[in-house]
Length: 285
Ligand code: NAD
Ligand code: ZN
Image (cartoon, rainbow, N blue to C red; front, side, top):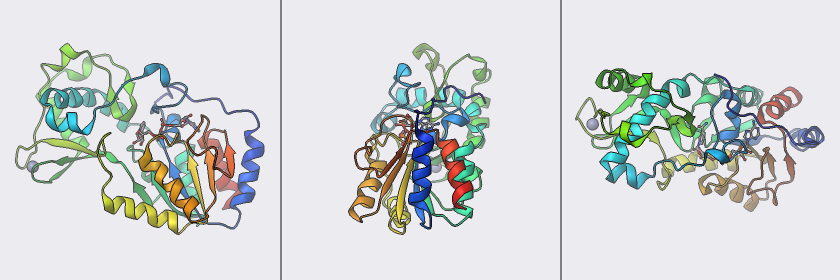
């Protein structure tokens, strides 16, 4: 899948990367990753420079639960977006992170991404803070179904749906005119016919406590926190920066655009996450 936008690294990032290698030498650290780790895999981020012009608002939890039309719009778009989203391949960022884990450098990876690409790259100690689009859960009976299986059912119920020309949006979504949504047929749970929801945390929805606890374990076991490819605009990710700082643990940022942790970061590398994580793996493992 071609990348829709890969940002240009800011001048001087290589020097900063060398300083980061020095700061992390001999330490085990936690990697907190965000959408910027997947832009090189062709999945757009929300707040990067290439995305601002496509400003849009993803569905909120309340809308999904309460509004039948909103839900139908979600599944109509998602059916279009899923084939491209699922076919994204791990980038150098995911492969670099997996090498760092295998080399014993990481306490774990806490990812805000829902694309499962860290796991696909071979990482094992991954906490998916916001879940993964690859799974669907029934809100009535709790049954799980794979998104691939649901896709088959959705396409059976809506023959020819994929023939529409659309632009892939973040989170496996796709842009679609409202009038097209009316005719879309949503599928229910195979077991009870109940309402299905992707097993991801929507805006306006809380992260499950056990997931947060698992993420804190990775952060608390670490001697440093490295944030890669995240603006940290969302509090559910930023809280781990706060936790690290409370513990007196240094925070480093690998991100091309500005982040909420820039003022508190010990090192700030404005380079591409793929290139930097690949280098860290080569130098530290
Ligand atoms: P964000 O869009 O707020 O920030 C991404 C940051 O990454 C930007 O600051 C951008 O400058 C930077 N960036 C982009 N490409 C980069 C690269 N190659 N190297 C280095 N930096 C790069 O993303 P976020 O902070 O992760 O928050 C978005 C939320 O939306 C997440 O919580 C996530 O659940 C969801 N989301 C997920 C995906 C995905 O699963 N791939 C994609 C979009 C959004
Ligand atoms: Zn059910």
